Image (cartoon, rainbow, N blue to C red; front, side, top):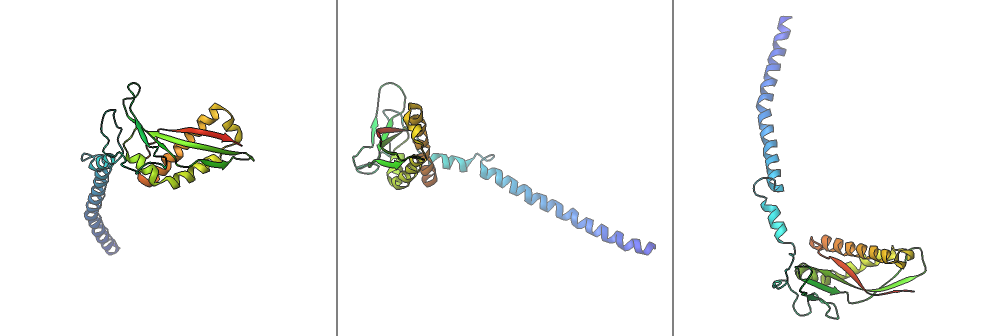
Length: 198
């Protein structure tokens, strides 16, 4: 019987030795992967990846500063050439640029026979890339805005509070399209140029 125990002990010792050799290799690999993950996430090593991504986002433009991305000619402008910048002396320290959508929006309202027809503009304090993106993705933005309008009950647009909520929903919809397409939103507010319910 003692002969039976001896081979089992040898197998056990051999397996234990293999485990002792393999365990540090596995831990080293996992540790290396963990360190790589932390470096890639920017937690250690200076965050180089995060800085590069941040640098590509449109920047706030201070009043009096030149915007290196300001649209030239027809770029970033609606048919009316309505993208323009405003420099006031008071208020915000940042330049505001406006973009007017070239066509009106007409949509049915949720659970109603009523139609709404609106003309919209929006503003940004970011550089001209946002204006360029608005023009570039106007078709996708129009579709998203029409979906928001179609999901708006008639009673919501009968009050100032309801119109304010609608403006916020429209702003969010534009930023979602820009974020999906370009990786960054940048629209601060949406404005009604005209508002008609029939």
